[in-house]
Length: 101
Image (cartoon, rainbow, N blue to C red):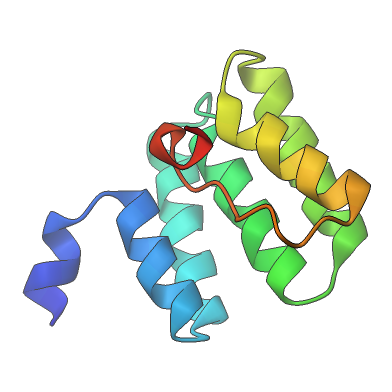
């Protein structure tokens, strides 16, 4: 499985790990992604999802905002902030831009 995980994007890895409840492993992947690309909004958005899944809404919002600040055009962060802000759980988590269509 590790070989398969290496070929996936960070969003795909985190989607899988979060679905499995592997939050610590997901956070480790995100930390590595942040070190590789400190100006990317993607890792912060993903970390927001992890924290939201762990019922840490303040931390989730902090990372969604950080993602948005790094790139205000990054739709997943905006969608996840809307989801969290409204409490509308019918809005699915946005891991990628494709989830925003």
